[in-house]
Image 1 (cartoon, rainbow, N blue to C red):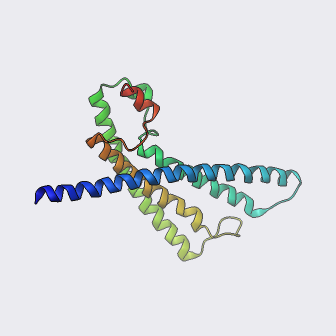
Image 2: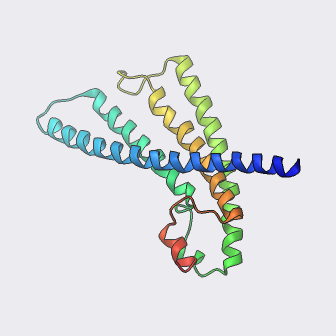
Image 3: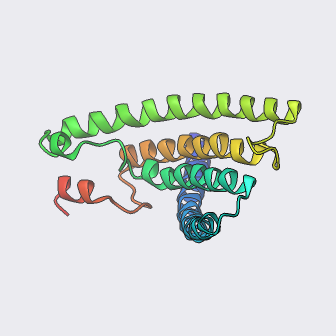
Length: 185
């Protein structure tokens, strides 16, 4: 009976880990699409502004795209612990100390990202309730605000998946350059 519970728990964690890996890859693709669209819209904005045409909502669209790009781009970084590492210091630490730092970073990432996701969700719901608009007044602000709870929520799960991989040694994710160097790969 305990072995059966252990297998069920393990399958659930494996499914969560696999989901997070797929979500991180999805957010990679979404980030690339947003980046391409942002470049296109920025180019159009420069041309339009050079022609002396003012489009009030264009700045809001550019800001929204940039916000989404940042938060969707952070998810894969959280999954592989690539964005909160100082390689100059980290790579000189003994292997045991690096693992301890990874655990601390993962736990702090889970706590902080989870907290920011909750606060971001509350803020987004408040903006929906009050019918807030972006500064130009042409769009509702909730699509822009959605990037925070969604991005940080997925980063929370990504850090949990990273923590899981630390204890199991499992590598569903791609290793960053710093991790490859620190592990001698």
